[in-house]
Amino acid sequence: MAESKSQDNSILTMLLSLVIIILYYMFLKPVLKVEIMDNVENFAKFQKQKYIMMIVLFMLLFLIHMAVNLMGFHNKCGGSLSNNLGKVFISTFVPWLLIFGALMLVLIIFPGFKGAFSNVIGYYAVYRASNTIFVKLLGNAQVDRPLENVEGSESEKANILEKASDAVLKLVGNTSIMINQITPENFEDMWNMMIPVMKPEMRGVANAPLKAELLEQVVLRDNIGECCWYLYTMLLLLVIVKTMLMKQECVTMLSDLKEKEGEYDKQQREKDEQENKDKSVVYKG
Image (cartoon, rainbow, N blue to C red; front, side, top):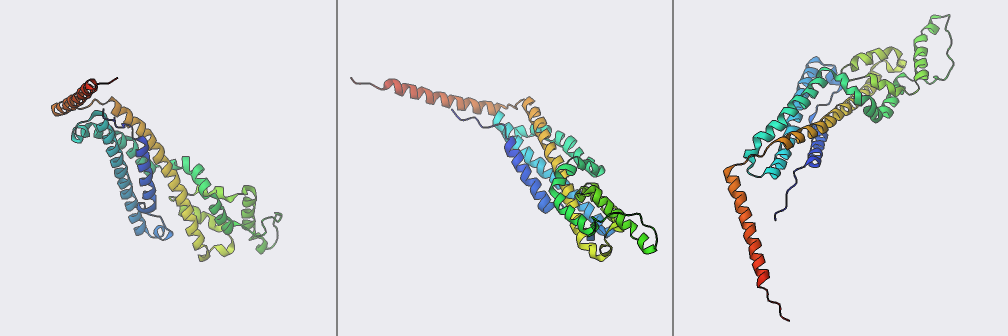
Protein backbone atom coordinates (compact mmCIF):
# COMPACT_ATOMS: atom_id res chain seq x y z
CA MET A 1 0.00 0.00 0.00
CA ALA A 2 1.09 3.60 -0.66
CA GLU A 3 2.40 5.52 2.34
CA SER A 4 0.04 8.17 3.71
CA LYS A 5 1.44 11.65 3.44
CA SER A 6 1.63 13.97 6.43
CA GLN A 7 -1.31 16.33 6.88
CA ASP A 8 0.25 18.36 9.72
CA ASN A 9 2.94 20.73 8.45
CA SER A 10 2.99 23.08 11.45
CA ILE A 11 6.75 22.84 12.00
CA LEU A 12 7.47 23.56 8.34
CA THR A 13 5.07 26.51 8.43
CA MET A 14 6.71 28.05 11.50
CA LEU A 15 10.23 27.58 10.14
CA LEU A 16 9.36 29.24 6.83
CA SER A 17 7.51 32.03 8.62
CA LEU A 18 10.48 32.62 10.93
CA VAL A 19 12.81 32.88 7.94
CA ILE A 20 10.50 35.42 6.27
CA ILE A 21 10.27 37.54 9.44
CA ILE A 22 14.06 37.54 9.90
CA LEU A 23 14.55 38.57 6.26
CA TYR A 24 11.87 41.25 6.71
CA TYR A 25 13.71 42.93 9.57
CA MET A 26 17.08 42.51 7.86
CA PHE A 27 16.24 43.75 4.37
CA LEU A 28 12.62 44.83 3.86
CA LYS A 29 11.62 47.00 6.80
CA PRO A 30 13.00 50.54 6.39
CA VAL A 31 15.40 51.66 9.13
CA LEU A 32 14.62 54.89 10.97
CA LYS A 33 17.60 57.27 11.04
CA VAL A 34 18.16 60.63 12.73
CA GLU A 35 18.42 62.33 9.33
CA ILE A 36 14.96 61.00 8.42
CA MET A 37 13.42 62.34 11.64
CA ASP A 38 14.91 65.78 11.03
CA ASN A 39 13.18 66.14 7.65
CA VAL A 40 9.37 66.14 7.43
CA GLU A 41 9.31 65.06 3.79
CA ASN A 42 11.75 62.20 4.34
CA PHE A 43 9.83 61.07 7.41
CA ALA A 44 6.58 60.98 5.41
CA LYS A 45 8.28 58.82 2.77
CA PHE A 46 9.64 56.57 5.49
CA GLN A 47 6.19 56.08 7.00
CA LYS A 48 4.68 55.27 3.59
CA GLN A 49 7.42 52.77 2.82
CA LYS A 50 7.01 51.18 6.26
CA TYR A 51 3.29 50.58 5.69
CA ILE A 52 3.94 49.15 2.23
CA MET A 53 6.50 46.73 3.65
CA MET A 54 4.03 45.65 6.35
CA ILE A 55 1.56 44.74 3.61
CA VAL A 56 4.32 42.85 1.79
CA LEU A 57 5.09 40.95 5.01
CA PHE A 58 1.40 40.11 5.46
CA MET A 59 1.14 38.79 1.89
CA LEU A 60 4.35 36.73 2.12
CA LEU A 61 3.33 35.09 5.38
CA PHE A 62 -0.21 34.46 4.14
CA LEU A 63 1.03 32.87 0.90
CA ILE A 64 3.38 30.59 2.81
CA HIS A 65 0.63 29.46 5.18
CA MET A 66 -1.78 29.12 2.26
CA ALA A 67 0.63 26.93 0.28
CA VAL A 68 1.49 24.68 3.22
CA ASN A 69 -2.18 24.35 4.26
CA LEU A 70 -3.15 23.49 0.68
CA MET A 71 -0.47 20.82 0.59
CA GLY A 72 -1.68 19.31 3.87
CA PHE A 73 -5.35 19.40 2.81
CA HIS A 74 -4.42 17.77 -0.51
CA ASN A 75 -2.59 14.99 1.34
CA LYS A 76 -5.72 14.45 3.41
CA CYS A 77 -8.33 14.51 0.66
CA GLY A 78 -6.43 13.83 -2.53
CA GLY A 79 -7.82 15.06 -5.83
CA SER A 80 -6.54 18.08 -7.69
CA LEU A 81 -5.20 21.21 -5.98
CA SER A 82 -7.79 23.37 -7.77
CA ASN A 83 -10.61 21.39 -6.16
CA ASN A 84 -9.25 22.03 -2.67
CA LEU A 85 -8.16 25.64 -3.23
CA GLY A 86 -11.47 27.28 -2.34
CA LYS A 87 -11.92 25.69 1.07
CA VAL A 88 -8.28 26.15 2.04
CA PHE A 89 -8.37 29.81 0.96
CA ILE A 90 -11.45 30.60 3.05
CA SER A 91 -10.12 28.76 6.11
CA THR A 92 -6.78 30.56 5.85
CA PHE A 93 -7.50 34.06 4.56
CA VAL A 94 -10.41 34.98 6.85
CA PRO A 95 -8.53 34.29 10.13
CA TRP A 96 -5.41 35.96 8.78
CA LEU A 97 -7.28 39.07 7.73
CA LEU A 98 -9.33 39.34 10.93
CA ILE A 99 -6.53 38.49 13.39
CA PHE A 100 -3.13 39.21 11.85
CA GLY A 101 -4.38 42.15 9.79
CA ALA A 102 -6.12 43.58 12.85
CA LEU A 103 -2.93 43.13 14.90
CA MET A 104 -0.91 45.15 12.39
CA LEU A 105 -3.55 47.89 12.43
CA VAL A 106 -3.57 48.00 16.24
CA LEU A 107 0.24 48.24 16.41
CA ILE A 108 0.11 51.17 13.97
CA ILE A 109 -2.63 53.04 15.86
CA PHE A 110 -1.48 52.07 19.38
CA PRO A 111 2.30 51.45 19.20
CA GLY A 112 2.42 51.36 23.00
CA PHE A 113 1.07 47.78 22.82
CA LYS A 114 4.55 46.70 21.73
CA GLY A 115 5.69 47.47 25.27
CA ALA A 116 4.18 44.17 26.46
CA PHE A 117 7.24 42.49 24.92
CA SER A 118 9.69 45.29 24.16
CA ASN A 119 9.82 46.41 27.82
CA VAL A 120 10.90 42.90 28.86
CA ILE A 121 12.49 40.91 26.03
CA GLY A 122 13.54 43.99 24.09
CA TYR A 123 14.97 45.62 27.21
CA TYR A 124 17.30 42.70 27.93
CA ALA A 125 18.56 42.88 24.34
CA VAL A 126 19.58 46.56 24.55
CA TYR A 127 20.14 47.39 28.22
CA ARG A 128 23.94 47.14 28.16
CA ALA A 129 24.41 49.33 25.09
CA SER A 130 21.76 51.84 26.19
CA ASN A 131 23.23 52.11 29.70
CA THR A 132 26.62 52.95 28.19
CA ILE A 133 25.04 55.66 26.04
CA PHE A 134 23.12 57.21 28.93
CA VAL A 135 26.18 57.27 31.17
CA LYS A 136 28.14 59.10 28.47
CA LEU A 137 25.32 61.61 28.04
CA LEU A 138 24.15 62.12 31.60
CA GLY A 139 26.90 60.73 33.82
CA ASN A 140 29.26 62.82 35.84
CA ALA A 141 32.82 62.03 36.89
CA GLN A 142 31.97 63.29 40.38
CA VAL A 143 28.71 61.40 40.68
CA ASP A 144 29.76 60.02 44.07
CA ARG A 145 30.39 63.41 45.63
CA PRO A 146 27.91 64.41 48.38
CA LEU A 147 24.98 66.57 47.35
CA GLU A 148 24.68 69.86 49.16
CA ASN A 149 22.14 72.64 49.33
CA VAL A 150 23.59 75.34 47.18
CA GLU A 151 23.35 78.92 48.35
CA GLY A 152 25.45 81.84 47.28
CA SER A 153 26.91 82.83 43.95
CA GLU A 154 25.16 82.48 40.60
CA SER A 155 27.83 80.09 39.37
CA GLU A 156 27.03 77.70 42.21
CA LYS A 157 23.31 77.98 41.59
CA ALA A 158 23.92 77.13 37.96
CA ASN A 159 25.17 73.74 39.11
CA ILE A 160 21.86 72.80 40.76
CA LEU A 161 20.46 71.26 37.59
CA GLU A 162 23.62 69.25 37.05
CA LYS A 163 23.50 68.01 40.64
CA ALA A 164 19.86 67.05 40.16
CA SER A 165 20.99 64.92 37.24
CA ASP A 166 23.60 63.31 39.47
CA ALA A 167 20.91 62.57 42.06
CA VAL A 168 18.78 60.83 39.46
CA LEU A 169 21.74 58.70 38.42
CA LYS A 170 22.44 57.81 42.04
CA LEU A 171 18.85 56.80 42.71
CA VAL A 172 18.37 54.89 39.47
CA GLY A 173 21.77 53.24 39.38
CA ASN A 174 21.26 51.42 36.07
CA THR A 175 20.26 54.17 33.66
CA SER A 176 19.31 51.63 31.00
CA ILE A 177 15.78 51.43 32.46
CA MET A 178 15.23 54.83 30.84
CA ILE A 179 15.23 53.11 27.46
CA ASN A 180 11.78 51.67 28.21
CA GLN A 181 10.36 55.18 28.22
CA ILE A 182 11.64 55.99 24.73
CA THR A 183 9.98 54.82 21.52
CA PRO A 184 10.53 55.74 17.86
CA GLU A 185 7.36 57.83 18.07
CA ASN A 186 8.47 60.00 21.03
CA PHE A 187 12.23 59.86 20.46
CA GLU A 188 12.68 63.54 19.54
CA ASP A 189 10.58 64.76 22.48
CA MET A 190 12.43 62.54 24.96
CA TRP A 191 15.79 63.59 23.55
CA ASN A 192 14.93 67.28 23.92
CA MET A 193 13.81 66.64 27.50
CA MET A 194 17.22 65.14 28.33
CA ILE A 195 19.28 68.01 26.87
CA PRO A 196 19.11 70.22 30.03
CA VAL A 197 20.53 67.41 32.19
CA MET A 198 23.22 66.30 29.77
CA LYS A 199 26.88 66.93 30.39
CA PRO A 200 27.77 70.46 29.24
CA GLU A 201 30.09 69.09 26.56
CA MET A 202 27.24 66.90 25.25
CA ARG A 203 24.68 69.64 24.70
CA GLY A 204 25.81 70.57 21.19
CA VAL A 205 26.75 68.78 18.01
CA ALA A 206 29.03 66.51 20.03
CA ASN A 207 26.04 64.37 21.01
CA ALA A 208 25.12 63.53 17.38
CA PRO A 209 26.87 60.11 17.33
CA LEU A 210 25.30 59.14 20.66
CA LYS A 211 21.90 60.29 19.42
CA ALA A 212 22.21 58.00 16.41
CA GLU A 213 23.36 55.10 18.62
CA LEU A 214 20.49 55.64 21.06
CA LEU A 215 17.93 55.74 18.23
CA GLU A 216 19.37 52.46 16.92
CA GLN A 217 18.81 50.82 20.32
CA VAL A 218 15.30 52.27 20.57
CA VAL A 219 14.40 50.90 17.13
CA LEU A 220 15.89 47.49 17.99
CA ARG A 221 13.87 47.27 21.21
CA ASP A 222 10.73 48.34 19.34
CA ASN A 223 11.31 45.76 16.58
CA ILE A 224 11.72 42.98 19.12
CA GLY A 225 8.39 43.85 20.71
CA GLU A 226 6.72 43.94 17.30
CA CYS A 227 8.32 40.66 16.24
CA CYS A 228 7.12 38.90 19.40
CA TRP A 229 3.54 39.97 18.64
CA TYR A 230 3.87 38.57 15.13
CA LEU A 231 5.22 35.23 16.36
CA TYR A 232 2.64 34.72 19.09
CA THR A 233 -0.17 35.69 16.73
CA MET A 234 1.07 33.20 14.13
CA LEU A 235 0.99 30.44 16.74
CA LEU A 236 -2.61 31.34 17.49
CA LEU A 237 -3.44 31.35 13.78
CA LEU A 238 -1.85 27.94 13.28
CA VAL A 239 -4.21 26.46 15.85
CA ILE A 240 -7.29 28.28 14.52
CA VAL A 241 -6.66 27.50 10.84
CA LYS A 242 -5.76 23.88 11.55
CA THR A 243 -9.02 23.45 13.50
CA MET A 244 -11.03 25.01 10.68
CA LEU A 245 -9.38 22.76 8.07
CA MET A 246 -10.08 19.66 10.16
CA LYS A 247 -13.77 20.55 10.08
CA GLN A 248 -13.77 21.05 6.32
CA GLU A 249 -15.14 18.15 4.29
CA CYS A 250 -13.15 16.89 1.36
CA VAL A 251 -14.25 17.88 -2.11
CA THR A 252 -15.01 14.61 -3.90
CA MET A 253 -15.28 14.64 -7.70
CA LEU A 254 -16.40 11.76 -9.94
CA SER A 255 -12.98 11.70 -11.57
CA ASP A 256 -11.35 11.40 -8.14
CA LEU A 257 -13.61 8.47 -7.24
CA LYS A 258 -12.72 6.70 -10.48
CA GLU A 259 -9.02 7.35 -9.85
CA LYS A 260 -9.23 5.95 -6.31
CA GLU A 261 -11.24 2.97 -7.57
CA GLY A 262 -8.61 2.31 -10.21
CA GLU A 263 -5.81 2.47 -7.62
CA TYR A 264 -7.72 0.10 -5.34
CA ASP A 265 -8.34 -2.38 -8.19
CA LYS A 266 -4.67 -2.24 -9.13
CA GLN A 267 -3.56 -2.92 -5.56
CA GLN A 268 -6.10 -5.76 -5.29
CA ARG A 269 -4.86 -7.37 -8.51
CA GLU A 270 -1.27 -7.17 -7.32
CA LYS A 271 -2.28 -8.73 -4.03
CA ASP A 272 -4.16 -11.58 -5.76
CA GLU A 273 -1.25 -12.24 -8.10
CA GLN A 274 1.12 -12.45 -5.16
CA GLU A 275 -1.17 -14.87 -3.35
CA ASN A 276 -1.42 -17.07 -6.47
CA LYS A 277 2.37 -17.14 -6.76
CA ASP A 278 2.68 -18.14 -3.13
CA LYS A 279 0.16 -21.00 -3.61
CA SER A 280 1.90 -22.24 -6.75
CA VAL A 281 5.21 -22.75 -4.95
CA VAL A 282 5.87 -26.51 -4.56
CA TYR A 283 7.94 -27.54 -1.58
CA LYS A 284 10.00 -30.73 -2.06
CA GLY A 285 10.85 -32.99 0.89
